Image (tube, rainbow, N blue to C red; front, side, top):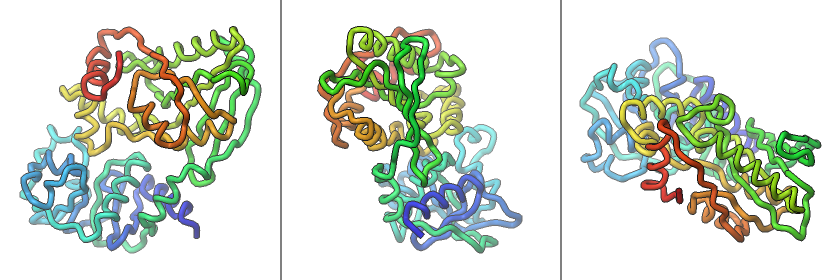
Length: 349
């Protein structure tokens, strides 16, 4: 079995609540796992959750961003594991303790487990070697490294797609056999090798793009980007919208909504993600680079207010010749969100 297939099957297992074997451990996801009488002496959790549990002063839990292995006096069943995993439940479930952080035998395997949880869209918390679990999908850090190589992405289909802002548009769909996400590019205007395209990377946002959420600026950003590209097309140029299936900057729809719950409790968007044990930026920029390569784009003018996005694309080989400002006015519901992007993530607004 190929490495990429093992990763795909491991992600499927985590979504269904089945165990995976990573390095020396069998790991059952705390959020989705099931089974009568399932229990374990240890859990693997994120450093952010360890800090919430007041474990960061222990030597084994003091390394920032590192996974943490914890042991409880009475062990962990699934209800307790879920209460420990989900910070949205903290107010309703006073946390039981004490917990002791222990040395991790295989750090690479622990980091891989955390990353697999993020990719599967589940909380990064596992029961370790739980009793009552006999089968597990095996996957290794090397498998994940191979899977994350974006070269397996290919064009699956393309078609003419007149849209409201531009009648000369084409949609291009991309697929990887080991990844359920299907990214698309919308090319507005006639592709012209002599003109550098105006490009926007837009991460999928169901709440903003489709439902009109006022908590973010995603919907207005998408509309404004399409309008700017249509203007380019009308002037003999062209534009490319990369619509990336990376909801919530890569943490997934369910976890994004969990972050919204935490924001309602007073946390900003960065702290909410960290409290979930998830990164503030988890998008897969090599995928965007591969999409541009497949449609024959070598150099771009990038619409973004995020200098880190420019550097991330340049870091994976994209020639970003110009950053084009893409600022939109705030509303009462997203003022704090936009201020956080400016003050904590370095965005230009």
